[in-house]
Image (tube, rainbow, N blue to C red; front, side):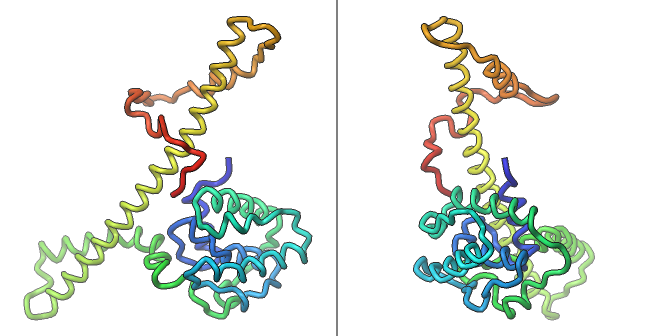
Length: 260
């Protein structure tokens, strides 16, 4: 299994100086182009649009990406039609492949993504508000709260000195942070349910094979590896409790069509 959504987002934002909050945002094709540029240094980033808002605008970005693949003989089909729809699973799988390719081919050394794209913004204001802030806001959230506490107890902000405006700004900022955290939690829960569904399908398949072996169906060959897979699926760690069946997430979901 490749890197998680959170790990990939942190890597993309750090490497390309972007502020993506969702893997789906890579569906514009811009991030893929810049990642390949960090490897080869010859991608025509001047032709890449980082602030696209419409699906038809993504086509140009993927033309640039495909040109790079052809030039460097990268033997990988780019599923443009799927990626352009900005769905979670399609972009997650392709980005995991891109990350593996980058790990194997990145030459090392310094890479200045802003200079390469001549200061173009990472995403449009509408699509990427709060992007780059994910890393900094999370670390700054604690200090913001502590400053608020000192203000309340120490009386450092007095009426008539602009304290009201400052307090209002703090409240707005904290509310934004809360909304972002809620979105992050929601995304993690969906991702958890998605992968749980896959494990559940494997569990059912293994159990059916074992049941068939026990019943000694004609022509059926017992596979010892099935018991080994089942042992892995049922293994637990200290402190782990199996949730009741009615609380198991995604038990009846159709994970093949799941989008985020």
